[in-house]
Amino acid sequence: MSDAEDREDVRRVLGGDPRAFEGLVRRWQRPLLNLAYRYCRDRGKSEELTQEAFLRVYRKLKLYREDARFSTWLFTLANRLYTSHLRRYSPEWVRTEDMDNLPHWPNLVASLERKDRDQTVRRSVTRLPPKYRDALLWYYFLEKDIGETARVLGVATGTVKARLHRGREMLRERMAALAPAEPAAEEV
Image (cartoon, rainbow, N blue to C red):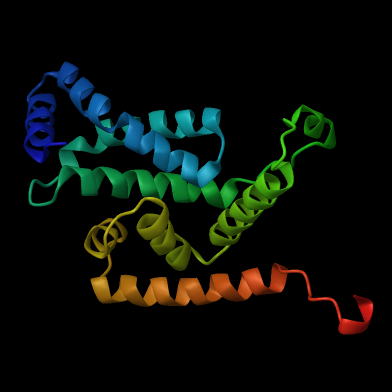
């Protein structure tokens, strides 16, 4: 995606051509939708959040400064919106009636264990303090480098490195606390 195209579309919108905003939406809809989904894990809600993010971007477009990449500015606005949603969001539990619809295949147990582990990691990450959660989310889940993560979060690269380190340690501690205890030798 070209930052030059983004800047040109921004200039056109600010110059009175609201149709130019379609180019921004077309280029950034999928990345913002993916980001929203990583926050809430609900397809419908992530679509709503993406629409809200684009509304905010459109309303605040005059605040965009061309000395920064448009994508960094866009993701910063979206990140703030999604983070505020996450504070209010309470995840839904899977109903036992829905478990009857699970497919049956030889590796069902391994697949469920892997899915359970992934969900546990995601849930544990979302419960970290925001500064650690956001650093881990941007770096690992969204696969941004340290510099881009720092720009989006508005902190120094050293701060991102420290938050990643501390966040990983906190996550390890939480995961260890969730792991089932090893059975004693006499129990086996």
